[in-house]
Image (cartoon, rainbow, N blue to C red):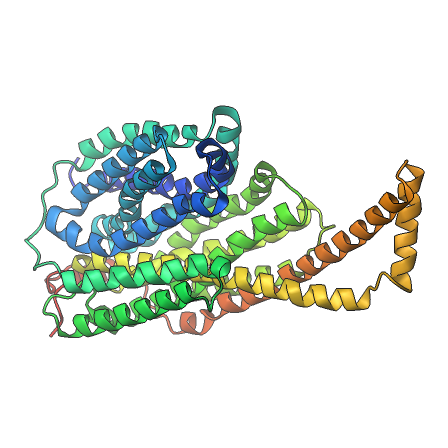
Length: 526
């Protein structure tokens, strides 16, 4: 099949979707297995979390380099290479003999996985014309949203039945199937014109900035936001970003040319994507936490409850991509943000007694909103740049989403802790176990404990413990409600920007102007 053959580009899409799904799902499946890994490696919680942290940092540092590497060696070749690295890293993780070896192999795995997402997005722009790009990105984005939802359930079953190493066996097997297919479909493609020299100064400064910021977000909750290590991380991040900013303004061939921001739809799409990531990934973190900590569901039950929302996203993301090709991105993004923010706001009404159907109904509403907004946002941003800049644009979008998601999780987790303390103090003041209603509750629980065989002192302790557990759960429930409202607000911040997206509808004649000769990748605009 030739590159211009319509069926050929859909084959490329299928291969890219499979690799992307595998790389993204890996993150959530390994999270579920951390307790088993901790026991197997005989380590503690603080140390075992570096399996996740090291992977996150490796992926984030890899993303900015994908545009230049794709231009230098060809995006097809780089996708195959990234898939090979990810699969090799998965195989090595499955035979890890110690925690340091597992962390090192996870870094190798994440180097390949982190590159696949921006390279895959660039391939979509490279192979699909404007009038089909929305549908392609919609299908591709579906797997990106389904993977983290299906991951906990899949990881839970595999870990329970076959042990934590089976998670990496799965990626090894699937990768071994996809690699020959990708080589057959894309292996013969040659690289384009040789790109300008790599911007090492800008890349190193950006890498240091990403490491410092992501480490700060990841460790701030545990070590304290005003602790010396976290303040040092912020300081290093500020210095690194300042160096990066100055470098990109002065170097001849910047790694992220600021000329991209001259495209209005790309800048607006980047901002909307960043704000959505803050609320979206923060809420993805909150819902499972609520179900497991407040309602005592296990990981597999939580995954099954979240699945209907993922199915709804899988339906609406390709649909919104198709509609983007017909009516433009603006109305879809605006409506999607509104629905998603509304669903987050409605979450503040759920409590420890809410049924799974209450949560599923909200997940369905959220799935519709996310499905309507994500694909048009990405499509509008990527349609605003020409094909030679697609690699840089996709890398910048991927980095923005990664940083926004990390900030969202860290911010909402911190606010959850603080609001829990506030509500706990408030409820403790209102429910005093030494008098009034509190005494009646304690006495009733004490008599109930006595009736089933507890001694006097033990019965009183059980009664006090039950009351305090109820107070604690109530405080946590109210705190979750507050934080869901915050997630709604953070999501809605993207609404004004969505209104300024252009009404332009992709047409074949627009494609001709987009594919006209343009400055080489990573070249500073005149």
